[in-house]
Image 1 (cartoon, rainbow, N blue to C red):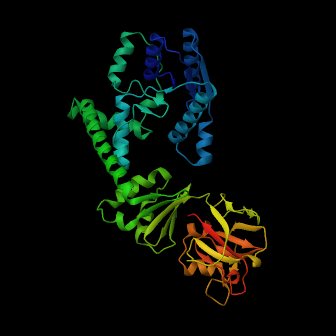
Image 2 (spheres, rainbow, N blue to C red):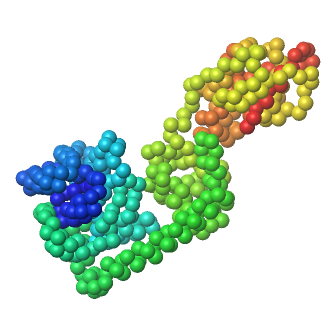
Length: 414
């Protein structure tokens, strides 16, 4: 249980103790208010000892951390405390993290998101539960909590920083919300109804997003394909893209939307993913998808391969229809073991039907290979000579002739 020593968290402590729940207290000392911060720590520790409840205390050099990382104090404090809470959860086998957020906090969050600009998710208030974080007091107002604390003789400490307008949330709390409550004494009740309606609207939107995803987006083994021709039929295509791509860390939405009309090869990066325009589609794949240096060996005795591709080998008496997934080669021209590898800069081959050699990089360009296509092309090689760009183009040098005595058929299961 996250306990600052303020009225909200001390009421939560009181309630959970009265219910005989098995819990421990976690207190963060951010060392931002000098002696007052240390007194809060001592107060929480003393209270826990009186109730015989385990207590964890952590001190953070918050100001230094904020200065070093050029972040606001509030952002740093939030990141530090939740990182610590989750470490306690994992190291001590706790089930949940309880916080004492209440209805007024949810309204303040709504107004902050409204002022900054937000999608639908920013207008549905603070969630009752988010992963392992549970907020039992969220249905109660600040006034409800104050009345309960006074009626039940709950002790707490006042945080002097709450009285200042240094932080945005405090400005809303002191200057904006009182005016709104004066205009509408039932503001919190109205807010609850608004949030309920917004959550229902959000649910409808999520259903639409999921439904369209099934018809527009294809999930391959290592990447995702967004069909732009299908997507652009919808007037709200930007909203759909936003919902699909937001979980992958994209934030420059102007760049993402511009990608739809961009030339092939243009891309937008998030911290973890690449979004690539490739003709009529967008390709989404993880950044760690790079050209592999792994090499797989194939002996003369093998009749099939399962890793990294599914391939089979058999001798045939004549050549039937050769396709992109089936080739025929003169076995006598092969030097075993064959290898399967990724392409390398400087690779050349003689495309079937041609008399001269061609750089693989030029072949990829002519064939309009995307970054993804190039990174995932496999080469079947004999003594480092390319026999086949698997599933794409065979090499003329290994083609059976009238003098061939042993024809090897090679199949690729795409």
